[in-house]
Amino acid sequence: MAAELDYDLILEDEFDALCLDVTGDAADNTSSKPVKYPAKLHARRVAAELGCDSGLVYLPGMPERLLEDSDQPQQFRQRRYFLYMAGANFPDCHVTYDIAADRLILWVPYVEPREVLWYGAKPSTAECMRRYDVDEARYVTQLPKYLSLWTSAHRGRTLFALHADQAPVGTDPDARLNVSLLRPAMDRARVVKTDYEVAMARRANAVSSAAHRKVAQLLLRRLRSERDVEAVFAAVCTAAGARDMAYPVIAGAGENGSVLHYGENDQPLAGKHTMVLDGGCEWHGYASDVTRTLPLAGKWTPRAAAIHAIVQRMQDECIAGVRPGARFDHLHMHAEDVAVDGLLRLGVLRGDRDDVLRAGTVAAFFPHYLGHHVGLEVHDVSGALPIAAAQGLGLDGGKRAMVTPKDSLRMRADRAAETSGHASSRARERQDLRPNMIVTVEPGIYFCRSYLEGYFLDDPVHSRFIDADVLEGYYPVGGVRIEDCILVTRDGNENLTTAPKGEELLDVINGRA
Ligand code: GLY
Ligand code: MN
Ligand code: MN
Image 1 (cartoon, rainbow, N blue to C red):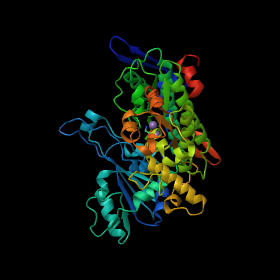
Image 2 (cartoon, protein in one colour):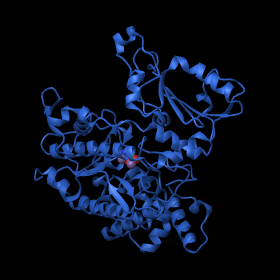
Image 3 (tube, rainbow, N blue to C red):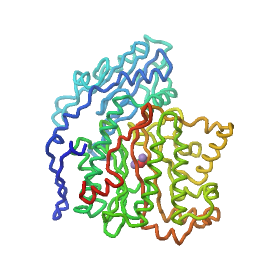
Image 4 (cartoon, protein in one colour):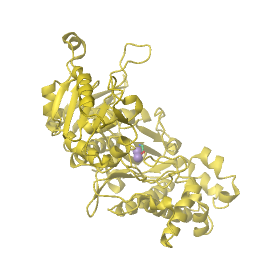
């Protein structure tokens, strides 16, 4: 990928501006245009998950909206469930799928010529037929009539909508509306990616990886602040055709690296040892999610090196465990074991290994779940079963969930019960990984003073396992997280993320690669 993108990024000191020259293939983003969006395949998957042989699925896309008390548009972001079934990534569309007739219709807005003058045209119905694999593309003005004819011709059949407030307006009041089945059915469909979706995720990862590489290349030569880092990252993605970020860039230097979703990105790099850079763009709506931790002087301080080595081992060993049938909560516990061994070796943790694990104290330093699904959302749907172990404590199964000592203990208790043949229903309901799922593996170790002082250092259960004097020396490390997007394959996994890490990252930073 790096060879495909040929940039010369120049930070102009005087104007604090970013100039970007794009040459070669990178200027021609059309060459990477995707094939037809497989809307029909996705619609059939949803119908199969619904388990119904008739009915009409109706999904409205996102309307164009203005900012409050303003004539300026809100940044457009297509509704994800709509995007999955239709592929159309522009405002004011709708989609219908007649299950029995196997007929998928995309409804698109007609744009008046005077609107074209101001805002340009939207794809015509003919263009939509070329772009998206739908049976028909029609103008939205005909939709009310279609819906009213459909409901009167199919009395007793169900109209499936995602939410009550997304039911189509003006349909027959006698139509049977169901708003409870569609979302779980779509979640089950979305959690296992189609080959098209994998291709999009692969491309998103390639662009994000090139952006991470560019930051590493410029780190010692040109970048002086977290702001510079964010600007370079976004510039590379935008120039490659990926203008939307899957989430706000996290560029946290020094102690800012201990804030999981740090977002200010406005501090100088000078005087800091490490930087957590968590950045991922979207490609045609599909997210990537990539983190690297960089040594800001081009080499690690001894403490940062030690923490980085532990996290790299957590990640390497967990990625090696990603395969069909593997359980993510088991991988998470393995990462915890590696963290405990490493932190005991460094003297940050003290005491007996099993006692430390039985107290769950590792969650002081590794306070989030090992990963999550990635797809049309960066924290994508997880299907019928949660990937996360922390489900049930108000933590959503699909997200980078918080893991507290209690969660850690519960995971271990569940595993012990399973081993002895007494699995709790919670444990039985956790998800096995399946081919074509895409998950992040993103272990981290953080030294967040507020969190540690607020919940651990004064707590007799945990404080006896933490050496506060040794810990003091590790606060400047901030945090270390390493995150890749991993595709589950038939016989193991493939790492979709190609951003440099380990020795290669050091070589790139120091101009040796
Ligand atoms: N970038 C958000 C996450 O890693 O989950
Ligand atoms: Mn993530
Ligand atoms: Mn991330």
